[in-house]
Length: 363
Image (cartoon, rainbow, N blue to C red):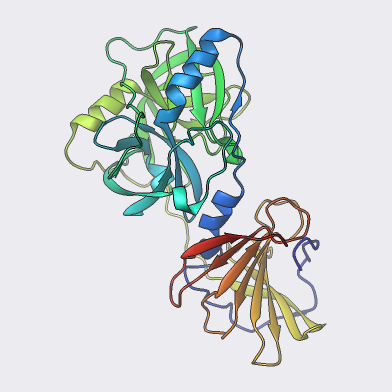
């Protein structure tokens, strides 16, 4: 079933309740998907020796931050294992996964390389979070937070992160402007305000939480969000980061908007022959469109399967399998290269939303 085109909801309207899959639809598969979808080779868009040196010296201090919802970036700022990232990267989790850069450029990594990090402080106003790992790899040093006057407009700046799953990617650009008391909000619906650095340095989802660096390798900001249009990229300034690190308690803000709650519902329902049963789409965000498809055989001894299109290419690439029909996945299969064959299998313990292990598959 992997690799097949996504089916549009069709058939008669369905009155059956949407399955209450453990962890919510999609939560159980996202952690493995985030790791599996990464491209291990770093990609440096450099102009010369200076850029190469910045990347080589700073990249070991940039980490990959992984949660069930996806991935982001972070930067080691303390020898005690403290790491700064964005609040919207860690969300409400008490613990997240952290991966340090492999010593060999382009080396592969997987679940065994993930270190647990505790979320020890949050700043909802500036969209920052402080996490901490118990051990830092040998030879990896923290990066210093810049102090003094704000960076000058026109200055060269550098970014390292994991945009759209391209791990340890280096980009460079210039400072377009420094904007004080700048207000914005994220998908979490929180009101944010901070001094931000507007740059032309290309960033994308996955860069969030990673460092914006000066030529001296000091962190002048934390890459946080994009604005509308081209070249509108923003980093929370070093002065806000320093103030955040100096505080001993969390800082909270208000909600920009309260989004209405939404109950999942089933859409079109059609009979199936192999296996004999029924197939139906589930609308999880109340937009009238199917977010995943459930295949439910009539024979209660056969597993229920859930099909997802994670990367939005119009073909199913993730399948969760519930063998005993208890609304808990028993294993998942992931097609990470789009060839219609599983590349990664995740195994689940009963009642847990996340796999306890991942195994590479040869199809």
